Amino acid sequence: MSAVSASAPPRQWRDGELAILLLLPIALINAIGFILPVLNLARYSFNRSRIGGGIETVFTWENWAGLLSDRFYLELVFNSVWISLAITLTTLIASYPIALYLHRASGAWRTFLTVLVISPLLTSAVVRTYGWIAILIDDGPVVSAIKAVGLPAPSLMFNIKGVFIGLTEILMPYMILALMAGFGRLDPRVEEAARTLGATPARTFTKVILPLTLPGIALGCLLCFVLAVSSFITPKLMGGGRVFLLATEIYDQAIVTLNWPLASTLSMLVLIVFGAALWAYSVVLRRLD
Amino acid sequence: MTTLKNATRAGLTALALALATSVAAAETVVLTAYSGIFQENYMKAVVEPFMKANPDITVEFYGMPNSAQMLGTLRAQASAPQIDIAIMDVSVAKAATDEGIFAPMDESVTKHLADLYPQARAEGVNAVGVTFDNLVLLYNTDKVKEAPSSWNALWDPQYAKQVSIPAVPDIQGTTLTIITDKMAGGTDYVKSVDAGIKRLEELAPLVQTWEPRPDVYQPISSGTAAIGIGWNARAQVYSDLSNGKLGVVLPEEGSGFQINVIGLVKDGPATDSAKKFIDYALSPETQAAFTEQMFYAPTNSKAAALISEAALKRTAAGAMDKMIDINWLEVAKIRDSITEQWRRRVIPLSR
Image (cartoon, rainbow over all chains, first blue to last red; front, side, top):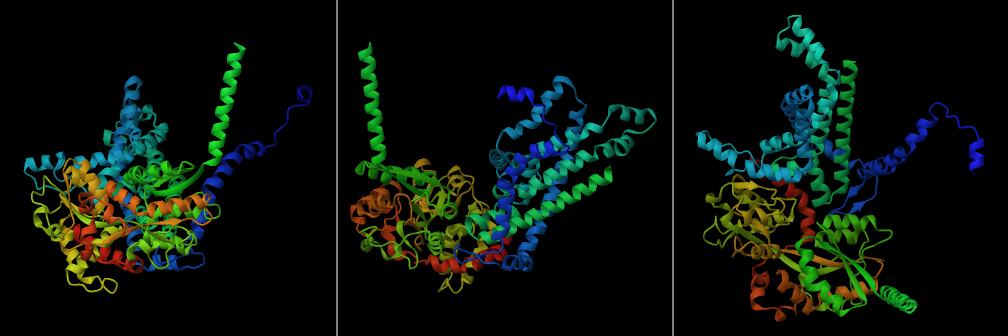
């Protein structure tokens, strides 16, 4: 055996052959673990749901037609998209200065701050959500403090405001990490050059820093938008049953009402929204290059 | 030395043989039912005594958080079932029956069928009632000083933004709709629940959350909410665990039942032993034992006589005449319409 391998010349890989061979395992895993289930889900969306949760295997457009003609579901899609976009924007505004500061920091201080940013990810989102409920509830510390100052007490929990605050905090680490990854092109010497040439700090930011960090912004926004659209634990816990989103509705239809065909149709709809987000991202990236 | 070694070897061989034979003789029945406190109490009151009485049968309890997930798992295993018995909500069991998951439930499975209350037998469902539960009023004893006696306490303005209601499609919300409809003068919930929905519209602005998590019992025990609705059996157990913080009342207007049924999975791996377990679970003695343990009302009419007065008082067994007869299979047909009315008329008023 060893004699044979010793005498045989090393196999020459043709271009692409090796790539295909190396990609094969992950392609297989993806095909079995992702593509097949998604196709199955797509098939389910054409089945008919029987009263009480049974499924009739047929081929019908009923679920799709029902979805597109029902105002509740159209509002659901619209709400999910704009709420997720708005949350992405607040996350970006809250995260950008932190990411920029981290990018400029160095040494042990930077490591320490990075660990601080990532540390929320070590606790489950469910636990953090319960934490937010304790903080923001009507007789909790935040509302009590606002009342103590003499301002009218806002209702910050079990409504859309709660979902906003909770999801923004939960998504911030992802946004910061994505921004930092995209800040590679930001060379401090370019900023210094701008300042030496007489640009004000504001002008340096809008004309130099911001354009150079756009790829990071695009990546962070894509990531947070996708995570916001698909998150259901936080909206369920903090929305108090008043905030209807695509992800929470899929949960209700799949787990509570047992209408799997409708849940599948809604899931496919989410996939279409994701597709649109990816397309928008690639358009933005192409423009930037 | 050698003798000792040989002796050890012989001993080990004997032990291995003994284990092998006992494993071969023992049959494993897989039961799926609710995880959490249901599992804990069902193991204690039913499964463990059954295994003691039948040393050749092992019952493996496969807990799942809700009936829908049980149905999902049974569906996925339809061609090669790994589960023998399921305990789930009756309306989900109807779906399972329609899909051919359950084997017929007849005298060959259990001899107790004739002793079950009529509500435990639903037409077109190959499973029979194993527990009766009912909707109750829950309150925090610190925040609500005097125990309420009527569902109307939910509408009391002093508990504004302190009311916790699991909304439809959760069947606790559905049951509340039917009770409210009857209280507001509705005559037939199958035809219309309009009167109930109108009354719930008045409740909406007082509600803190329609989505209490992890369940409705915890926020009320802890005082996050003052008052709400939930299922009796769990409420009674959590009430005992809450040091008296969680109060439980079966209101004077009565309530509605939730029914868990037990079904035999068709072509399961251990059908004969599974039949033995189902028969055991439905026997008056076992039914009585589980009521003592967790305060579900028994489905076997002969069980009540065996239950202590103290435990019986904490179930709906003493108020059977006040219970609204909810036909869950009929409700399944109007569930979408009730959900729609909640979403369009009730919940928007609570924003």
